[in-house]
Length: 607
Image 1 (tube, one colour):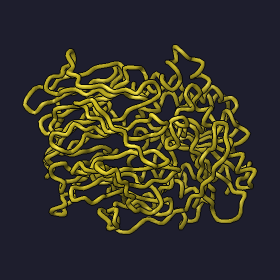
Image 2 (cartoon, rainbow, N blue to C red):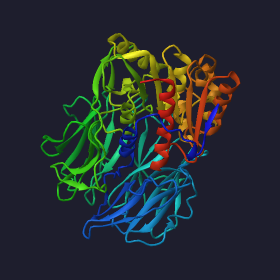
Image 3 (cartoon, rainbow, N blue to C red):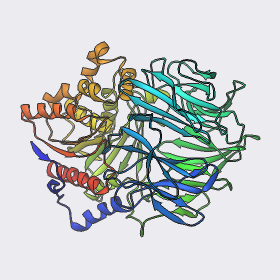
Image 4 (tube, helix red, strand yellow):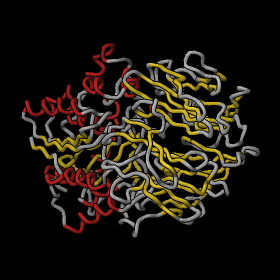
């Protein structure tokens, strides 16, 4: 085994200096998130940026033009929001990327940080709603979920406790009603909603205003309450017709209106600030677009954006729409829908990347959507299958520095939106239930075979790689499809599912129980069948494992179990460890990880 566990140990890939400089420039170019603004003070904003080389939180006063760095921590800070009056910034403080911590506050204009609510002990975050007179905080631990209310003029109190996942989701503008999502029915993938009256509710005597659940296999997602002072309209995402759609639920009258749009993909939305319309996001076939939906007339107006992906959008009080957009070729930009750039922190744009081509391939569960990128030269290509995590996620036509780095190195890249991916309907997303891992890999194999028959890829020069669930699929694929892969690179993977279940956060254990059909005590064979360590004897290709020491999602012990088996069996492998959690918010650390991955790929799979 080769161990690469320190920055100095990262192997430099055998690439020309100008190629290395190009792919690294894409990572180093500072990026910003879509600004979040205070409801009653929209000139006050917070956003994330890696301008300092680490993802941190920033305050932006649009009246003065001042930008101020809010947080400064060795492993970065991922989450922040504003109080409605814009006076207070809330940010989440974990430890070295372990996602376990407490909410902190800081004055918008600067000043000392303070623990927001002393009584709420450290936990994994499970929602935060900051109101005008109270705050609702969700926390998750190994004991389950606990939801708190902290009134400005009273003592914080627990209002809900349960062994299964729950979260605080939405608060009315007058702080009178709180919506929580829960999985008391036993499946956190399909949450139910409960509306509570904040003034009266306690843990022992919840003041329930209304409840809604669509039944087994149909989740409900509270998006937000209407923005008017006494608004009781709750915007809800549902999937009654097999895809993500919208309804408006008047929670006091307990009436609902479904919003049926003639759009083929999944939709989500938020209210315009005057409450008269919805800003609708539509995702379909790896691309997205945005619309304005008039609630009075039902008119749907498309807001023009270039082909690509809108990662987030918001309607401002003046009616303008701001969005975060990118494409596979062009880097992210925060701009208004009508064109002007809203926020930029980079002195110059990073290098352009490469366009993606669509492939639709027949598979065992239906047509599979794949995206491919060609390097220079004719096929067949040395090919890297970059499989996404999640599994409830998807690869798309957005700017990806890691994808472009593989293409710079001479590889074709293939993304497979396997069964389990979002954006292709509920049936597709849920098809891996009871047989996770093996189901997705059937789709990867179908795309592999189609590209092989097409002459796109070279069978002797195909590698499999991914992070998180994609890392799990990589290790599982190396063991169950050894004839297909010349090398594998698994980043922060599930490697030994039984041990992973024991050590991971409780919210993920609940998700696994729903996905596998029970706990390991109840359906042990299902976990064993889907666990990469079960098939480690069959691994024939060299494998690189990248692991985070503080990872709460894919914990280090179960990775060490897998590495130990590779060592016992004399299988060729390398490991790179880093001191953070489920990935890194430090840009130079990310670059080191890509350096190690490319060096490993170039060593074993020649472009």
